Image (cartoon, rainbow, N blue to C red; front, side, top):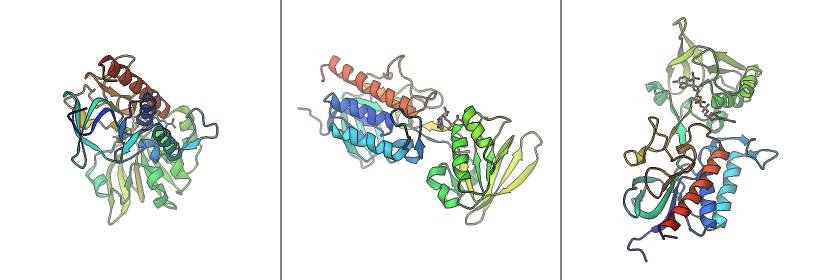
Amino acid sequence: MSQYQNHEKVIIIGSGPSGYTAAIYASRAGLKPLMFAGLQPGGQLMITTEVDNYPGYPDGVMGPDMMDNFRKQAERFGTRIKYEMIVSCDLQSTPKRLVDGAGTEYYADSIIISTGADAKWLGLPSEETFMNRGASACAVCDGYFFRGKEVAVVGAGDTAAEEATYLAKLCPVVHLLVRRDEMRASKFMQERVKNTPNIKIHWFTETLELMGGDKLEKIRVVNTQTKEESEIAVSGFFVAIGHKPNTEIFKGQLEMDETGYLITKADSTHTNLEGVFAAGDAQDKTYRQAVTAAGTGCMAALDAERWLAAQGLH
Ligand code: NDP
């Protein structure tokens, strides 16, 4: 019997594909994991439409439906889910101590971190001014509000290409603002963008300011070659320039790279701290796919189980 209340063998932080897969494996191993699902249960796939590249779905699947299935599968084997954030932690103590958003303390012999990553913003003050009034980081979530209106998308990766083609179905013109003279997106996605007649690509273009009254009306942009500034009338401004890992609360305790991605030991999910494992986008800046996140979630659960057994804790 533990001297602590709320003492778990495994706590999983985060509920994307990696968290749920860790939960499925850990619960099937009899570890009775407790999962903190956070504020966006299901992670980034909840704001995606169709997922066509996850094996096992020959006709594709909607991201939220897939995550719902992941959750049900984890719960079938006894995973308990709390829809709370973990706001602070002491990972060096034994057992490890976590505090949730309601101030409740939890203790765990092992922790699996699968907190994922969030969209990045340009950092313009006017971007904040127009947040929820024209500026968005998710076309799938907010695109509907801009149907029939002109919009801009910033970025040149797969996310930007996907958002632009999604918006092109709702909006008469989509201005794609690319800061260089080429896109980083996959060839396939680039072709799709270039073959969509109502996507207008602006090369060498950076955004200076979002402008308007109550709502966004236009943006001021600059051509970085000619230094010429101009305005584009848009009602929506979608930022699609990549992601930032959700690892702030682990700073100073876990090893991470300069951009905040957690560092795991080679061929494993072990972090620098015993009993703390990391999976999914919080530790992967290379692949960032649902299927790779799920794969590392499985690895984390197996690593945790073996580590607990070696400590005589399972
Ligand atoms: P990426 O990091 O791949 O691309 C970010 C893009 O944003 C780059 O083109 C970059 O420009 C641009 N950018 C960065 N900062 C700024 C800035 N301040 N101003 C203007 N532009 C900026 O991120 P993604 O989110 O697109 O993709 C991440 C990963 O997820 C990739 O591996 C991608 O393949 C994958 N993905 C796969 C999808 C799929 O298979 N369906 C869908 C979406 C993503 P520059 O090129 O000049 O650096």
